[in-house]
Length: 119
Image 1 (tube, rainbow, N blue to C red):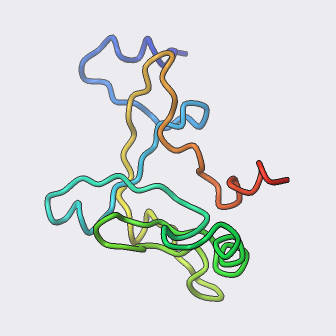
Image 2 (cartoon, rainbow, N blue to C red; image 1 turned 120 degrees about the vertical axis):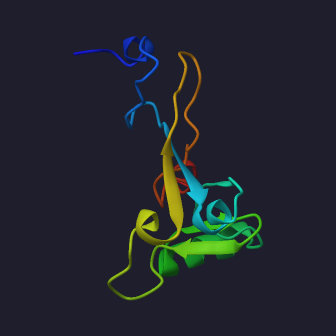
């Protein structure tokens, strides 16, 4: 098996997603279609919410993905059932290379990961 670092010796090789490297980024789908590349990150609450009201909204309606230009582009529990994954509707996924010693881009990848420091 080829290690992650060894896989980049060939110019024609692309990175694969590996959870330990956190090397997946989300790009706003609308902005991408308009020729802009804006990275977005899943968050437990919207930018204008206070901490506690944000956590109440998180418990009720799930996490959000918010674009600085388009606003909220995804809610994980928008409907009672049948919600699509963000990759199917709102965002474009890109796999990036993480160099040794560099940290991944999406630290808070799970919807409840922001609650862990409070527990």
